[in-house]
Length: 363
Image (cartoon, rainbow, N blue to C red; front, side, top):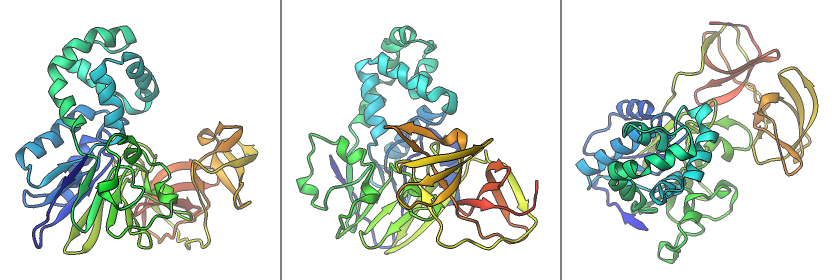
C-alpha cells in the first residue's frame, strides 16, 4: 500500500505520471531532463492504454526499477488496476469492450499488444479468450509485478499518489479499498489542505484551472498540492510532463507528440483578461450551431462561448464540452500548435496553454 523514498542531500527527484502508452514521448522526456542513475525517478501510474505502445512502456519502466530499485519507484494507477486485473482474471468481455472503446483513437490496447506478441488474434471476444492462456504464460509475471505496486509513496516532505488523498494521515488510509486513492476525479475541486506536499496525476491539469486551459503542472499553494498529468493521450493538446525537485525547488519539463500542425503568427494579439475555462463536467446549453462551431452558454456563469460541435455530448439531459474564450498573447513570429482550425480563428497551443488566435498566420 505505502512505499517510502528517502532522498540524499542534493539528490534530484523526477516525477512523471499518465504516460498512457506513449513510449517515444517517455524516452524524449527522460532525454530532455537528462535523467541519470543518481536521480530519484517516481512514476505515478497509468502507464497503459490511450496510446499504441502500452506493453513497451510497462517493460521499460519495469527494467528501470530492476536496474535501480533504490532510486526508482513505480506506483499503481487506476488503469493498471482495472485492465491488469481483468487480464489476470480472464475477463475477456471487459477487455473486448475496452478494445472497442479505445481502438479507433489509440490504435491498440495493452491486451491486443500482448496477444500480438504471442502470435494470437484479438479482434473478437472469442479470439481474446483463446489467446488468454498464452498471454498469461508469457506475461503473468509482469502483470503480477504491476498489480503489487504500492498506492502511495512517502518521500518525506512530499507524498505521491495517482488520484488523491482524503487527508494527510497515511497510517489511517484504507488498504482494503485502494481504488478510491487511484481514481479521485474531483480532487482538484476539494478543499482539504495538507501539511506535506501531495503530488498527483490522474486528472489532466487543464481541469484544475478555472480560467485558462494550461497543461503544465498545477500548483495550489493553499492546499499544498501539485497535479502533473498533462493530458497525454487524453486531450488533443495533451503533453507529457515531468515535475523536478531538488533541495526544495520545483521546476517542470514537457514534451509533445508532434501530431499538431505548427504555424507561425504574422500578427500580434493581446492576451485576454477574465477568461473562462469550461471543464467537461460542467453543464452548459447549446444556443445555436454554425457549421463546425456552436454557441454555448455556461450554466454556472451565464457566459456565452464558442465550442466545436463534434466535441459536445449529452449526459443526464445536459450538454457538456471542453472549451475556452481565452485569447492567447501572441507576438509576430511566435510558433503555434493548431488544435483546431475554425472559421472564427485558430484554437492553438503556445507554451502549454490553449486559446484562440484570430490573426494572420503562415504554415
